[in-house]
View 1 (tube, rainbow, N blue to C red):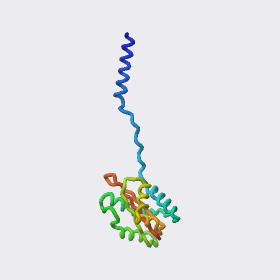
View 2: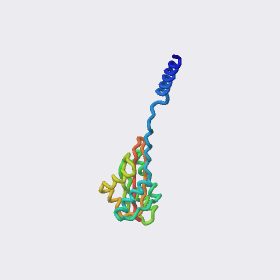
View 3: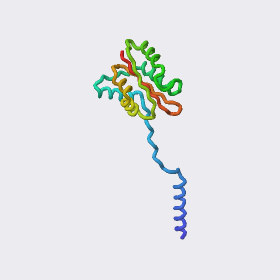
View 4: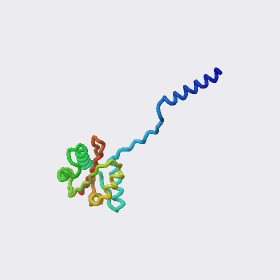
Length: 158
């Protein structure tokens, strides 16, 4: 009888430890990889090449200007959109020899790079910019305090 009591007691303790131990075991959700400039850049060039267009060259000065615009939208310094477009072009035209034309795509979304580029492809104005006669590009990404992600892509021909 003593052995039976010990067995029941041991079983009871084991169950209590199991139930009160570390809590439920759950699988950790995979962390979503943040979209990078390179992700957008590769997808836009892949799209351009599918249309028989030359790839764009990523340009650091344009990246900085695009990042600044995305940051300004993310912080609310400027409204979402193309406010300041002419000023951006003037600054870039001074910094990039022979810059003759410029276009810009902006977007805010919580989607990944494929979602961003797909949205631009399905918007006639944005698609026209992606397929335009440009050879340089810059991309900026910024996140607001609420987690909203803003994207700017600038296209330049020089």
